[in-house]
Image (cartoon, rainbow, N blue to C red; front, side):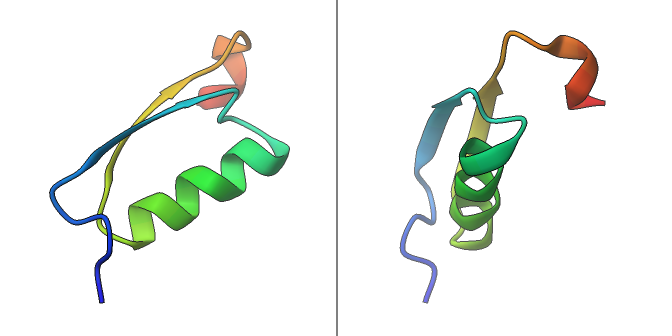
Length: 44
């Protein structure tokens, strides 16, 4: 079941740690994810 299909999620601090896990989970549930973080280099 894609609980967040068609939804957009904005995650701040989403490059590492807890934020990275949240981004992955939201994406796997069908959300379109926008990620913001102060460390641009870590985003790849």
